[in-house]
Image 1 (cartoon, rainbow, N blue to C red):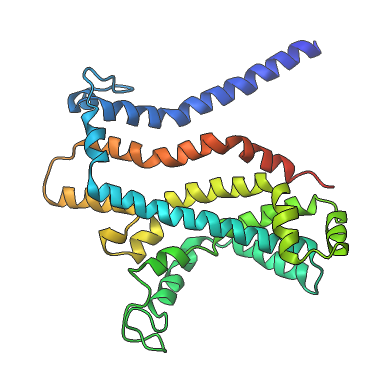
Image 2: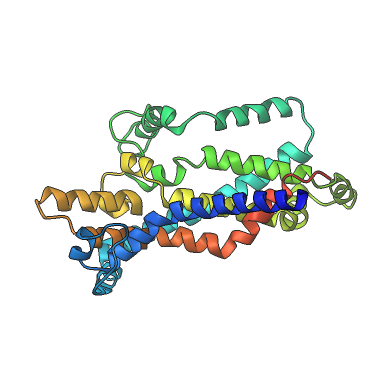
Length: 298
């Protein structure tokens, strides 16, 4: 009886997961098939558009598009910057909260956790005003008046959001991981005369590699698909990110009165979403390992 119950529970569990996976995979499958077929295949579809003729030239045209190429380079540069800075801040701040002893440490860390619960949309207007009134930037005087500050510049893209939810979350994961490591490492390193940077980068960093990689995946996916802040902070296409830039291109196409070419739009969306998918598939073993290790206490 117990064995039969176990089989039924396993069947229900894996069946539910399989159905959920199919539901989540369906939009991507629809998008991919629609991008490869003709417009008639898309408009005549019932469940999924089965291509009757293949149109790979859509992808060739997109890869040769200089505007799209510029958007990809902009997004890649910003994403790599965020991945590096988020990992650096997570490692440094996580070490401070985990291994250093100072008054008010728990209170400050609790404040960081509280900040994680504040939606980013609540702070978007103050953030915009902060960058618009940035002193001595964009024509502003030292009081932050007279110009546009860091709005419509790389400064807004590289600094805006850097100390947001993703960085705070990576700091939290890093502290949890470092808490699981025995304090003996810290004491032994100090007795050997190792400085703080030696302890962080030569002793602890190799031990927390899964957390760094997991944080890099989360940061890469989030920053690559970031739409809201670039759309607000950047007005010109030459500095724009891929998600907001694609929207601007499609908006211009619709404003000219052209009939929307949905298969081409699907091809553009497929190309846009491929880098995060490839990064996750490449590093997914570290992603799973990281969350398994943060729950282990030493």
